[in-house]
Length: 301
Image 1: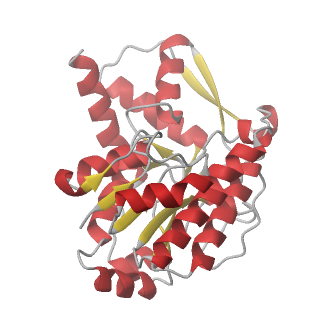
Image 2 (image 1 turned 180 degrees about the vertical axis):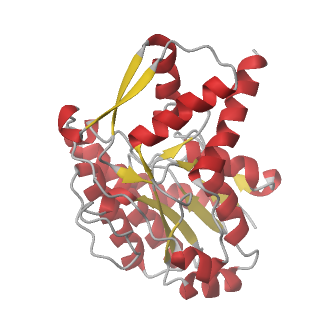
Image 3 (image 1 turned 180 degrees about the horizontal axis):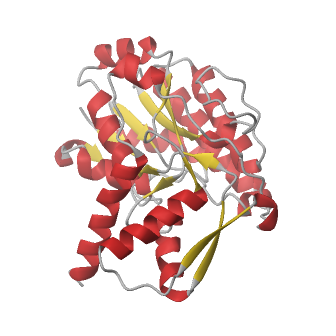
């Protein structure tokens, strides 16, 4: 099966490339071959690639910048997935498309289920929701995977930012009133590799069983403050030299940002377990693996 994996320069795409273990069957085109910012060019590019399965974790993820760059955010996050989904439906090619907890309003404290009402607060969230709608409306075999607070030991993300700040500053001020599940890109990739059947007909049946939508994230929840505290403590336990003496909890209102973030990003993982048998590792266990990976890579320098 030829698998088109879009966005391998990103965290989830890069992790998926490592865990799928089928290098001869995975297509990883660069932007010249497949440019999501130019949706009109995608059908011809897909005709040339002729994949038998498409996995799309690629997205415009600059949440604050999206408030001013609405056009490009919607082109990449909404128009491009819709075009890909219509091509997939015409050619009977299954599509796995990734979305986000930012499609929800963040109200209350109950974990969000797949069929809950979506009321995004930001341009980023609205663009991702429109992408979901486009994928569904295309009518092909698809699975939309929502996840939350993605990070890895590589690239630019909250995990890496906290490490840098902890090396430079005696005190870190981190938001404590936004709650969700930090989710390692590796955990997501391993879950996708587990749930993907090898046969297209089996894929259709499996995706249909989940109503073509599933939440995949590490289990249990914390705040950004709790996550940062665990990162700093984990680095200390691994004898990484830090300047940071304390992590100070603050409110979202103390840290004004261009885009409004959901306060409640908890995702209900019941369907992932019942439809695919997924038992996601806790965010603490996933973080320990990423900390070990980070320390090993630092020692290898």
